[in-house]
Length: 164
Image (cartoon, rainbow, N blue to C red; front, side, top):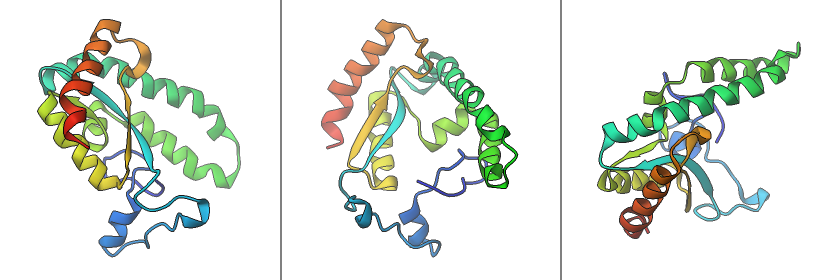
């Protein structure tokens, strides 16, 4: 996934095949890299399954935002080199600093009750054309372990059987 983000969206988030269908860039030809279209494509997404959207946000927002801030902090020194080619990288870092929970939720998050999560995963799989969906359940590493296990159980029992 390369390219510019949608206005207000996450940096670097673009579905190349979607852009091609909309008259933008040509679809990515991944065959020379040994990647077949519609196969062997795996992407990771932040996931929290609970009783509803508001509860999911309450449970996961602090950890997710901590994760993003830590990533910016660790990547920032790489963008300080005085090389013109790093300008795009610096722009991505600047956008990452402004990312909110709402941005993550809209662009890639799977936060809510099981029914919502089923539909959200289906939509993300369709949008990105992936066949492997990787869940990141404890964003930021600060969530209560039992809460994370419960989210994983709900995902396994009430989401996975419906997303094929």
